[in-house]
Length: 294
Image (cartoon, rainbow, N blue to C red; front, side, top):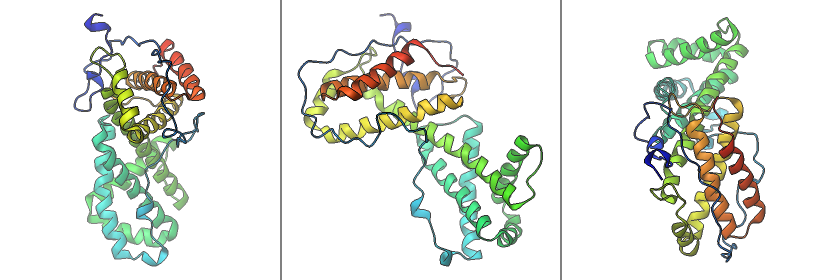
């Protein structure tokens, strides 16, 4: 197999972006699954449904929830100041198409920050206006509002005036951050799935079998993550917003789905889960034969 025909993981690495998207990958056929099955008692009850849900995952922000008794202007101002810098940093990464896995925390905190803006505005619009006046000297806070309201204007043709319009503006910016968060999740799986493949691009069946025998619980967690991220990726492609590396619309994501499905076919074949194996066989075939670029 020539160097240009191999499945290249290098362009999927977290550390650098590819210069162009003109090279193509040779997708392997479905892996041959050994006839002898491995006891699947430790690999049943996956969190992910066989037929994926349409909802895209969101970061868990439950730890940041507060009751109405916890709110005070000083506390709100302090929290907004802290979270606004994370929002600005996250928006900078989005503008740079920088969805590395190391940025997951930044996107998570930025989403929490937007949630805080929305909660304050929903709870008491007048207090929100007072807070805005108090924080007028904080550049990050002002930048967050300018970016948010300008996004609303770009979509609707006018700046938000009413409180409901401002809430809608924050919802729009939150959707952008959620999309970036999910792209970073995909990137993390693109990097972690490499260990299940040989340098030639073929599936490392010996390593998978070894993990099934010696550390099935850890492998199950990784498999479940790949299942979730495949579903996220499919929804991103469906929405048409699937660029996770600048200039590579759909390509890296398509490669991930093909390679992750290939791994899952082998895994579920070895554990005797025919239903999941058939589902990912069909998925693998569809994405291998019909390359998605939007």
